[in-house]
Amino acid sequence: MAYDYSELLTQALRWAESAQVEGRLSAERAQLLVTIDARSTDSLFAASQSDPDSRPLIVAFMGGTGVGKSSLLNRLAGQAIARAGIERPTSREVTLYHHQSLAINKLPAGLPLDSIKISQHKDAANSHIVWIDMPDFDSVELGNKRLVLEWLPHIDVLLYVVSPERYRDNKAWQLLLAEGTKHAWLFVMNQWDRGQPVQYDDFKRQLGKAGFTDPLIFRTSCSEPDGDEFAALLEQLRQLSGQHSVAQLEQRGEQLRCQHLKQTLQELAGDFSGQDYAQLQQNFAALWQHTEASLHQGLAWPIKQLAQFWAENLGQAADIKLWDDWAQNRLNDLLDDLVLQAAQANIPSKPLKSALQNVREQTEKNLTAQTELAGRQALLKPGNGAQRFLLKFTAICETVLPLAAMSVVGYQVFSGYYHSAADATAYLGSDFAIHSVLLIGLSWLIPFFLHKKIQPSLHKAALKGLQKGHQQALSMLRTEIEQILLAEQQRNERLQQQLQNILVKCGTGPAVAIEQGSLLGRVLLAE
Image: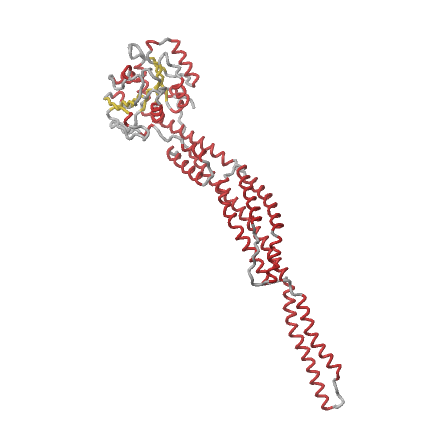
């Protein structure tokens, strides 16, 4: 499927705008796309009423001051439609000359009407050609040069007009080299009545150096027109104005613009392909290992202080910070180093820095909450499972064993009393009383003592819980940063994939095949 160039450029500009807003593409790099010219030749003139399926060939006279561009247009029109000679040695306006059946669709904002003169004709032989007399490119007036540059994207064929004295004009030659592949070129050595064959041959050699292997050069003279090649020039232009040739020129222009866009996008794609996230992940792992060890050492003291306070003052608020300015500075150093290494790995640092800002601001709150929660949970269930089982067991024994001992003693007392009624000599004695007291006392004292001894330390429980929560909080912090790095990588990869999709579309158009020896092959500069 072939995509329209304007559609591709619009997609590319939207992509660049999105990437720039996110900080993943610099304004300088985005400018490469913004400055691409979207103008073309098919937007200015409507097709003729007699042939609505074709558009006219846009032909412009271009050259330096005094080479006779306006005189050639006047000769074509058979009347003075463009001011020339003594009246206007320097062109300051654009003259349009076209068939009356053609109409201007619209003029871009950069082409003001006050700098355009429009004339019409009824010559059917030239009905498919729009002639434009351009301002002198080498004029000292910057407005003239601006007008030329504004009109150039809308031109199909440039008639490069020189004179025997000025065929080596450097300013116009530089324009030819810059615009060479974008247009078809016909060359006119005007004022040939003053020219020499050596000048013609030298001009042809200069064109050969510029890349034209067999350029079409016409020798004309408006003052002595008999026998010159003006008629041959008109005939070649009429052949180029055929529907097939215009379509080929249009397709070629579309292809060249797509190629230029593709080259620009490939250059931007290189910025994304050089991003080394694997190396950044490795660098972060090393940075984190050092920072984590430092935080464990530096925060050990406030954790111990808080554990001691909780053990001694249950239920009271403690004025002890688990995350102080020192810890925040260590984290800031880590994140700053990470952003710096991202920039060194050709990874956009602005969006990464923005994504890490929440980590800077919320770490103190999150780490403190996570650490204190784990400490409080540890105080709810102090000790290990065996300790808690023994605590419950000894607590039961504190009640059950004394009751059992008292039951045994009570039974012995009752039994002794019963036997004493039948046998007056039966007597339990003082030993029984002492032993009974000792049995009851020890049945309570031993489990009570064991219960006290195996009671877990609240300080140790709080310390263990706080340390566990601190480790969990740091692990969560590391995971959060790693997820941010992953999200940044995925976002950049999505942008890269979107760019690749546009690049693929840029290469889907049909290639324009032009025979080297054909008319188009002679007037077009090889890419």
